[in-house]
Length: 163
Ligand code: MN
Image (cartoon, rainbow, N blue to C red; front, side, top):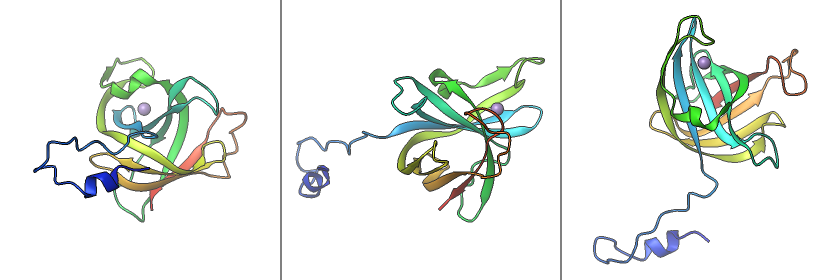
């Protein structure tokens, strides 16, 4: 049960009872990193288990060339890339010249997210983002024509949009 009912009955500027927090359970973190590599893109990452029933938590990652849309009605290509380690969620800095992904990385937005329906395995998830720039409900859907995607590796094209 939610504590909303408890909160609705009380004036927290009058009582010293604890306000309490709406449960953060099922909320995980996301980050969007602006990456000035050879081609500017935005890396969208969701904190979640590596696979169903896995205890390993990773950052599921997509390179979004034009960025995660802030408004409805815009669909953006999101190319799934390899899972990144969880510590990468706070990474900003400059990847040295000559190294993989060379260029400046800065955090464009971060916050919490919650899955509403779907799974990545099924190729479709609806989720809510609670960031500073991106908020509201979003969908990530895998394009059927991702011909090079097999057994979890390869080119894996998705679309991301706000609903
Ligand atoms: Mn990148």
